[in-house]
Amino acid sequence: MTLYQFQLLTKRNQLKAIVDNGVAIGSRSTIFYAIDLYQIEDFYVEVFYDKETTAIISIKSFIATSRLTPYLNQIRISF
Image (tube, rainbow, N blue to C red; front, side):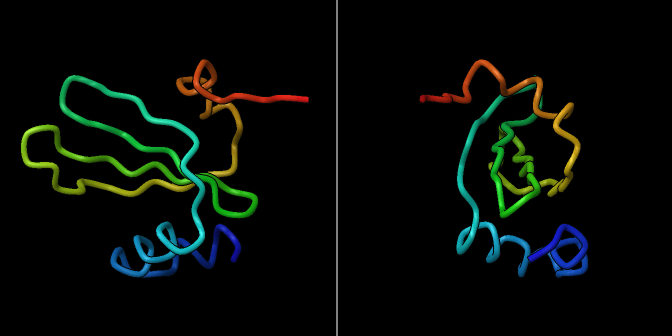
């Protein structure tokens, strides 16, 4: 699946793709949101949850590794 194909999916099917194919690689928190980061093939997906209701607010997908900066202290790379 490519990033473009993922972005064409409905929100429900995006969530299914995350469950079926995603690898959880990090999480972070803001004042209002809990955010989980997943990798699917060669792109990344952030799922934003409302902290009070735990409802999914948005799903953001991207390729740019610069957007991984908030997660770098959580990603373990071993040789």
